[in-house]
Every structure is written in structure tokens, then in C-alpha cells.
Image (cartoon, rainbow, N blue to C red; front, top):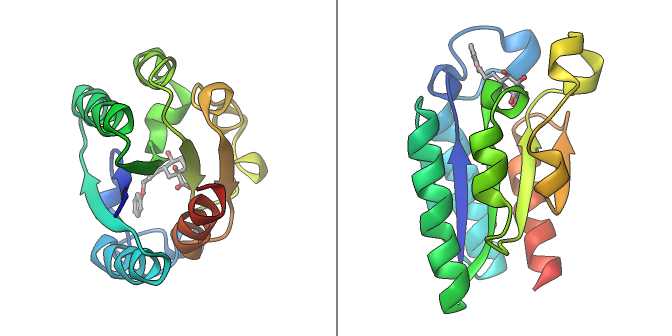
Length: 148
Ligand code: CA2
């Protein structure tokens, strides 16, 4: 059974507590349950994590790269939060690992402030998911299943 990594970056631990008009009212725990169900339905194991630290995301991408090399990774779904718009380190970590990575945003970043329109992740992502709310996580997992 292959594993899906779902990695969440800064402030996503606050999901469901503020800005429900942008991010909805479901918490990150709710998102984990949704991902567990989607992974079970598609025959994947799930590794679901959140951190507020850029270097920790880099370490987790390297870890995913090791699984990819071993043939046991289905792919990575990354909501890098605000690091999407700032992080060359995440771009570099993804580039060259060979991992299948889906960039995910709960909101439609292109309908928001101009500083959210640029992504350092998109050029090294296989696919981009944005604006589907938290259901985007389940859609991305189904998308990964279609790529196996
Ligand atoms: O739409 C997304 O998923 C984002 O990646 C979320 C990031 C934002 O910086 C990106 O531009 C788009 C922010 C995550 C913060 O989430 C919060 C949730 C509830 C309350 C406060 C922050």
C-alpha cells in the first residue's frame, strides 16, 4: 500500500477558528478525518502533518523523497500556506526529488490579494488545486489515485 503525505504549513492549525468566510468552519482535525476517509477509499495509507516552521516542511519533503525512491509514495499534497508565496527553500526541496506533488489552497488565491498570486511551488508541482474549500484535499487524493 502506497502512502500519501498531506503536509500543512503555517497557521493552518487555526483553521475553523477565524476567517470562516475565506477558509470555512472546519478544523484541521476535520480535514484529517476527511483525508483519512479519502485515502481509505482509494487504498492509500495517510501521513497527515502540520507545522509552522519552514525547515520542518523541507525535512518532511526530503522524507517523502526517500519514500518515493523506495517506491512506496503515492504523492504529496502540500498546503504550504504563506510560504507558498515566499519560499525558495520549498521550491528547491521539491525540485529534483521526483515526487508527485499537488499544491493545494483552500481559497482561490488568484481571487485574493496580488501577493498571493505568485507561487514558488507551482513550477515544481504536478498539479494545483485551489478554491474548492477543504474538500480540495479529498479531490487531490482522488487525483493522486488517478495518476498511479
Ligand atoms: O488558501 C489557502 O489554503 C492558503 O494556502 C492559506 C494560507 C494563505 O497564506 C495562502 O495565501 C492561501 C493561510 C493559512 C492561514 O489559515 C488560517 C485559517 C484560519 C484562521 C487564520 C488563518
